[in-house]
Image (cartoon, rainbow, N blue to C red):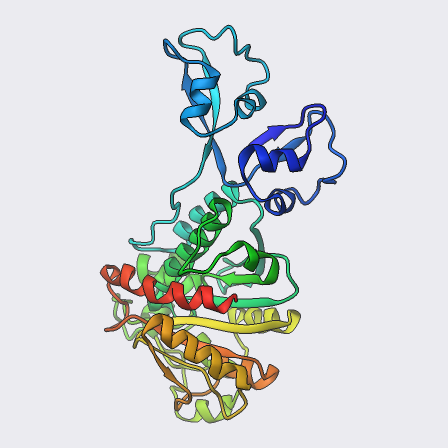
Length: 393
């Protein structure tokens, strides 16, 4: 919600007026000097939107404000040209409306465009969240990296490394929405008060690592690569089993953690799943995710996959003691089985543990055959949200 500064206003006053933490207002206006506001300057207030009301008989600013648990001055701020003592029936006034509902609806096919639309809506209401590009896909779609918090202690979470595991994207987007909502409305998630986490931990979320692949599974092949992907898919136009990127490379088998060993026992040519590529980090998506980790000092990493209701937390004995503590916590809040080692290499979390000796987790959400039915969404989210909020503590 955008407002304009009046003489004598301060960000602290806006924090009190709208009952929004001051740090969130400051971070929603990164170009503003919070100590020197200019009259008429535009300020973003997070957690609010503006609705329009037509004045009806008996309306007054006091009644309108009281019904919404607002100060009358909040209405005056949004209606500088309205005389509150001379309201007329049919006159339009702007009402600041606290957002108390979820924006993300994950219980539907969730392709790149739907994710982007939800992301834009979240950024409009919660401008203290920041968006950057970690890289681009083969077909040029951005790999968005969303950031919440400003601490140097950073946690990385990603989803949809595998195309037909796309349900992990709306799960992560729903969590981001709930986290943002909790910060502006002062409620806890799984018993965890979130505002202290905002100052303690910076969350980096890449909700869709393989946007080309997700779009392929949900929408079919784009004309530019239709013949190629159908050929890779052995002539079939059913892409529900497709895990790879658009070039038929499994992005989660692309990392230099015993890649050569994995390559010997996996497909030797592009395929709908399991082909590790001709070399490690040959794909733009895997390069982008590797560069993201190299550029940032992440304290821990969570990769959301499906399925199995278990998670893997070790690699070659290189995981630190902290990993076991976190694994026990994740198992407790999710009911999932904690598995230390599994016969697999060259995954993102494998490489992260190998290179940085920090906790990394591959979390297999849900149960069944990929792509999991959207009817599992609520059950999956219940388990995932507990692990995600615990990862930020």
